[in-house]
Image: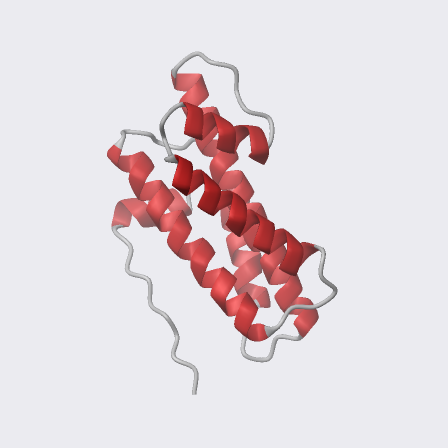
Length: 147
């Protein structure tokens, strides 16, 4: 028997997670692919959408911070992640974790032919929890992500 994990979000965290069209679309697509009857190919697609969500939440955060500080905006996930660390919006360990998570999503979800349900569940839950943590950190620092 599988027990569904329940994530409790504040109204502000929920709004931040749903703030942009891209993040909303990638999250919705991931949830659509992650269902009880999902095939390994649908689970692979789910992880691809979760990777897109992770990439865009960093990119949008980096761009919002850069715009507010009149700095050059990051252009991709890698430069956005480095920018967030250099601007002290994430610690070195948080950056390593995010890069490791991105690597797992890439290796298991995007480059793999299929994905096992247990691995997809683990990565899905990790991305959700990471997103909540990351957006909470930004919120405490006064950052509002804009599209």
